[in-house]
Amino acid sequence: MGASLSNLTEGANGSSISPGLGDIPENCVACVFLYLTPPEICNLARLNHAFRGAASSDAVWETKLPRNYQDLLDLMPPERYMSLSKKNIFALLSRPIPFDNGSKEIWVDRVTGRVCMSISAKAMAITGIEDRRYWNWVPTEESRFHEVAYLQQIWWFEVDGTVKFPLPADIYTLTFRLHLGKFSKRLGRRVCNFEHTHGWDIKPVRFELSTSDGQEASFECCLDETGQNEINGTHKRGCWIDYRVGEFIVSHSEPATEVRFSMKQIDCTHSKGGLCVDSVYIIPSNLRDRRRRGVLKYVSPPLSITCVILISYTSWWSDGADGHSSSLDFYESITDEKNVFAGAMELEIGPNLRLLHHTCETFTGKSKTKNGESTILLGGRELISGSGSWDA
Image (cartoon, rainbow, N blue to C red; front, side, top):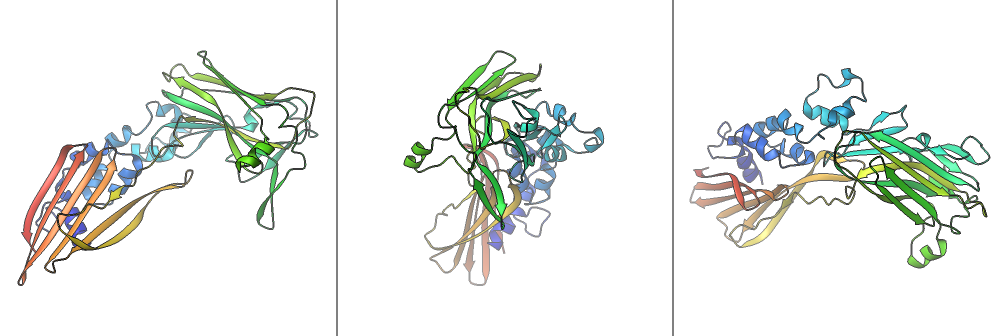
């Protein structure tokens, strides 16, 4: 492990005379980084000085920011970002930025650089919200806004909202985040009370969205299909559920897109209650379904192997919202010949982008010869390659 990894990262300025990743010019590394995600760039910044320098390049991080990132910065005081590098601006924008008196938040996804938004119940027009016989505000740590609207009982249920912002070009999905039942903590444990939960299985709730350029979408469903859910082995009560209303397309960030959304059940023949309304999310479509591929695989060297030793560690970069983290794993192998030690590594550092490294040490009496080869491939095309043989 130590031999193969040190020879991989050392270059002409290191203690080894073999070619390695340290010999790659920083501008070449920066060109490779253009194909990578921010977590992958931060992982590779740990390798050596050239990678670390390229990982701080403004030219690299400019491509990771949304085109209209200045619109997001304009929501903050100028002194918070005026002296920051593009990398630090990305880190700043990846944290939620409140606006409209804290009733809305916007941020940049840490992996894709795409813009996401959430709108709290405080920013919505809710029928009867002023009457405490119908609605209450419940403080909670389960909401990013630390407060949700709880409906005790009402006949005319209607929630409307609107947001106007120069969203970058993308396809977005709008969802309502709802919870059946009132939740609280008792003796440190989460408990739910369904005393007021009723009426949601009689008639469906209608969700709608429309945009300023004429796009529309709607969706209907019963929020409390208890019988059907028990048959299917699931239950809608006691947990937060995202109700997907539909998608809309933004072709240009200018002019600003206005999105109107609503949720209603206005059949006054029966009452309904026991519902928590948290927020509305506007997130690029399929962002939550993205699959993050493992960054490292074992590559068998052209030798028979009897033992494989795996050592791994996890990088400091992790996405708390999704629970994802990136990791680097390093492999060493021992051949069935006592006088040969071989190490091989394949590092997936982006879509179709791989770094291959193989080392072999051959012992002849008291002398030892090392052979190493490092290659960076984009698909099947070789970007950078280096190899060498030296006495150790």
